[in-house]
Length: 86
Figure 1 (tube, rainbow, N blue to C red):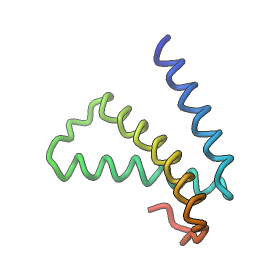
Figure 2: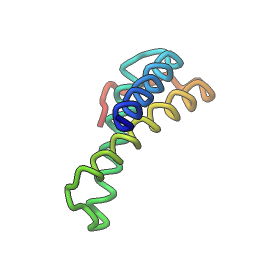
Figure 3: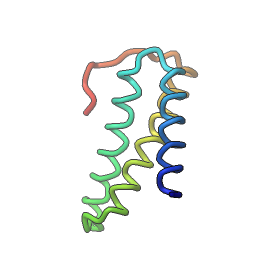
Figure 4: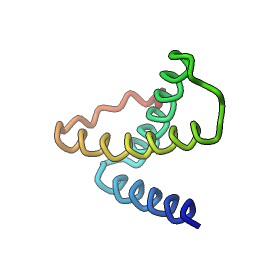
């Protein structure tokens, strides 16, 4: 049950932060970039075991990246998107 409430809380945060950005594709790209970068860094350091806990951490980093990406775009007024998530 705690995982379900954590997942719902994360989803609500993601949806609320998506409202603060001009384009919802920015939020989805932020999520993809965050999870991909975290996985890439873990693989480069040699600590990748492919466990479910590591994938959950990737998702958590993705949600944080959505929040901070929206905030940083709002503060910097940088709406330029290259159209690529990765």
